[in-house]
Amino acid sequence: MADDNNNIRFSTFLRVDPSADELENLWKHFGPRCYRLVWRTPVPIENRLAFGKVFADRRLEITKSGIDPWRVAFTDFGRSLTVSTVFLGLDHRFMGEGPPLLFETIIFGGEHDLDLSRTSTWEGAEAMHARTVEQLRSLKVVK
View 1: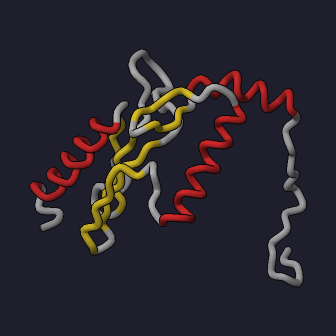
View 2: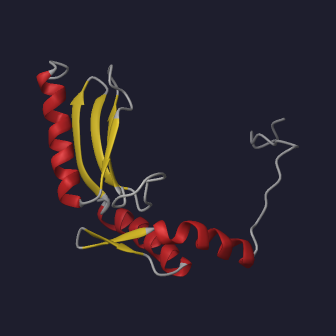
View 3: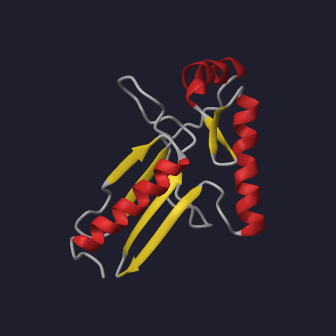
């Protein structure tokens, strides 16, 4: 049901603010998998307060400069086709062994929409972005 401000209210929606203990338990589970960038090098985040500061600092940098410090590369081919490579801040290696997967290249639009690949380093992410762009060009998807 919409109110006078045209906000939709869901009667079954319940907001739950986690307690300090619940936050600490979340940190114990996910914390060791969180990272920040120091001169393009991923560094594990020490605690949940540092985790919050990392995201606040990123938002401040974007607001001040208009540049996302976590963006590795972005290629816009027009016609609703882009390739974006970013630092994720969270290890996306959810199963198996190996180095953390912290960078992601994803295609938006076209027949390869949402195809993605991940890697562990900034340098690997730059190379992955370049390979993805070149593959799209070689497939004659873009000029």
